[in-house]
Image 1: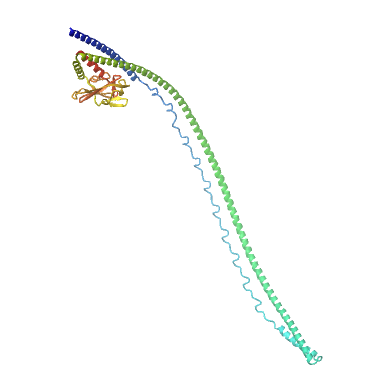
Image 2 (image 1 turned 60 degrees about the horizontal axis):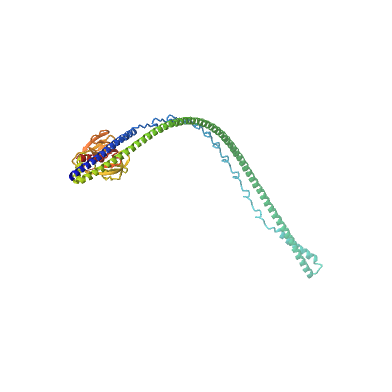
Length: 505
């Protein structure tokens, strides 16, 4: 009786557990359908956003300055050098002093023939003689006086006294006579000396006057000759200076006249060219203002079109964000459903464990091996897109942030590692049209389709073997990306498959 009750209790427990599993599976199926619908909506929104054709409102913008005159003619190109024909008014000028002669060249020395008038003069005192007549006369006078005295006193004085007195008188008379004679001779000599001196002085005066006269005549002739030649030279110099000044004034006047004409022509030409340049600049300024107005109008229109297009894109992006939010909620619900399923499986394991633990683990192991014989995952060495760049899948850990299925950063919840048979040719190298390459097993889903079945956007597929380890990641949005391509996580599908296998047993 006790065994029968225990069997009934086990049957009820098993029925209740199966019913609960069925409810959990039904709920998970419903959530997966909602997830698929949300995924489809998100994919549609993503496709709509991706396929949204943005037109460049500025693509047909034309440069209003393109036809602006830029090839300006050089208004100075035809300008002529108004000084080109200018002539040197001094070119024909001649040296008015070129024929001038030295008026002193033929001058003669008027003193060249002068003679020394003192050359033949004689000393008139050279032949003068002593006059002896005075001495002779004095001696005769003395003798005569003494005789006269002696004759006159002979009778009066006697012989001796008279004789002495007579002698004294005679001596005195003789002395007087001598003095008179000497005075007469001296006077005669003096007269002769004065006559000679006067003659010499007269000769000197005559010859000096002749020399002076000759010198005055020569000096006058020289002065006259110098004056005549100086006057001629001065006259010639004045004539040449006047001719030179006249010629310089004529050439200076001609040069000033020519310079004034050239300056006037140059100023006139500069004013004409400046006027043409100002007119050309005003024309260019007018064109620039017109082009600027046209450009501002075009820019306003194009910016308005760009703003409308940006608003439409923002609206579409908002809708896509809302769809991604709904998809994230559906993914979270599926995750919760999977968690519930895993919890139910755990409860079923506990129940079966109480019944026959060894039998359940054997069944679970057989189920995993059976399911793994059908599907494998991502080969070792394949890079996964993460926020920190591409990282080999074997180096990714739970808690790391990767680029999720929907292209947004997402967290890794679980990482599974499997031992593979290298002899099995179950792996595909799928190359897409955009150059992206994804390596997964034949049953792994890419964009929701098995790798062995996917064809959209595929350029080539190549099957290969030799894989020893494979990996799979469970993320918050049930997927991740390889080389930018969305790849589904196979862990939820594997859990459902294993549960079905165990349930059927």
